[in-house]
Length: 250
Image (tube, rainbow, N blue to C red):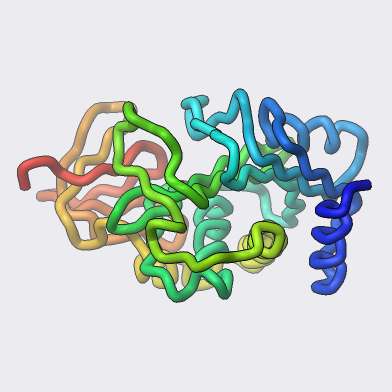
């Protein structure tokens, strides 16, 4: 076992959050795939973190550019409540509560992006293994990735003002935040709408919402407690699946 892995284990153990398996990698195809292999062996708690991914993915199998130097991690969560889309929202909200991130002006973009006024600095991918078990993957831009063809603004925690930090400390806090999110989920996501809307990107702004039936425009007034997007249109609408983006030429 290398020194960094021992240090991460010590950080997690000190917080009584040490999983059965802790793996730190220089590179991998996908940490979600790594944790899936661990789950298939019957292990119920684990953490895999890599400095680089060669086949990282986001929502809807979109490619997640994963250059060396940022954080890519995956873990397992167990839930008593059958899984639904609120888990990703809880993960995002709990990540924003990490002490070293609280001084930054951070937002959440529905349904699974870690956002700011300057753009996206991270993302969340939840892949259910059963009704009560899921892989939660998180990608964080510590530094600006070399992305030139993104369909949305991209930024990094460094650009947003994060001071010199311990990468391992942040990895341990991310793991704890994900596990805390599962607890919030198990307790019914108390006041989810109020907590989310406080941090929501584009709240009370005119947006476009792309869904299976087409494109809708309206004012984004937040989400409901069951995680649905609420748009103020001539007839108010709620959506559980789709993609939110700012309205062009408001």
